[in-house]
View 1: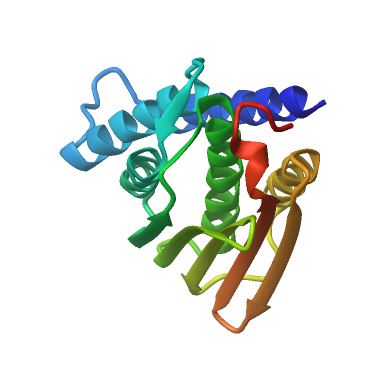
View 2: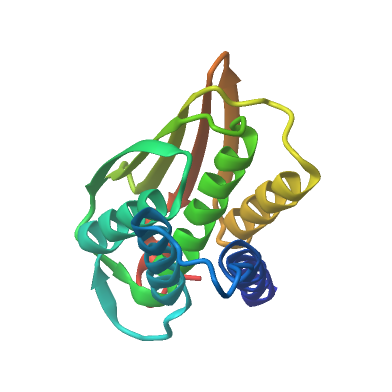
Length: 191
C-alpha cells in the first residue's frame, strides 16, 4: 500500500512537470530563470525517483532536496533547513522526501499567484523519535484547491503507513506540519 502512494505521488509530479514545462511554443525560447527552474525540477524528480539500497547521508540529501524544491519553485523566496541526523536507509529517506515534496507543493498551491513564501525544514532525533517539521510563512490560504487537498491527504497517508503521526496547524500567515516517527523505522530493519 505504501508503495502505491509513493508511485501515485511520482505520477502526479511527472504530470505536473509535463504540464508546466512542455507547453513552450516552438519559436519561444525560455529565459534563464525558466531553464533553471526546469533543470531543478527534473533533478528533484530524479533524486525522488531513484532506486537504491543502503544508507545515505541524510543532511546532504535533505539539504539538496530543499535546494531543488526552492530552485524549481516560482513561489519559494527562502528555504531554511536544519537536519540534525547522520544517515538513513536510502529507500525510506526517499519516501520521507516524497512527503516533504508533497507538503511543499501543498504550500505553494495555498499561496496566491505572484506571492512568495518561506519554507522551513527541520529534522532531528529526540527521545527515540524522528521529528520532522515543515513550516510555511507568507500569504497562504487555509483553504486550498482540490488538487492541493489530494496532495495533503496523500502525504498524511504515507506518514501513517510509515507508522508516523501527522499534525497540521495554521496561525494567520503561518502553516506548520509536524511529522513524528519511531526513529528505528529508518533503519534497514524497520518498517
